Length: 113
Image (cartoon, rainbow, N blue to C red; front, top):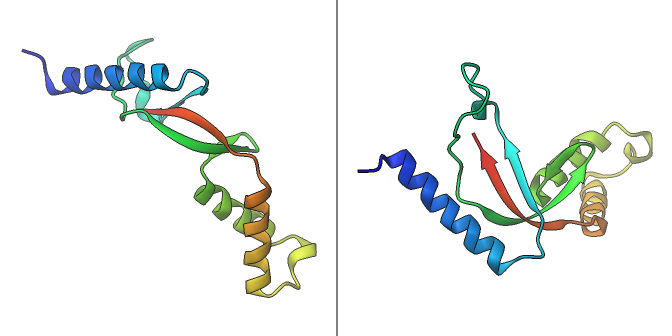
């Protein structure tokens, strides 16, 4: 009898294979969290969530979805001199415009760990 962990992992593999066959043109992005590494072994099986198709953009060296990207822009640009005189409403409109003009990549995404 298979353990819950094995069943879950096998299900994830079936879902991933299906997704790749249905969307062969999409890139595959795999993100590993700190729990994906075990200091006792060089390699270890890690649990992962079911793969999903997401639209992400690369900001600096981080991949982000639209919501995270908007929050990051909102925080990072707030101290910029050119935006200090904007009203809150105008600042938010500017952030929305930046998001609209940003290229997002549709990809098969897996989070491990």
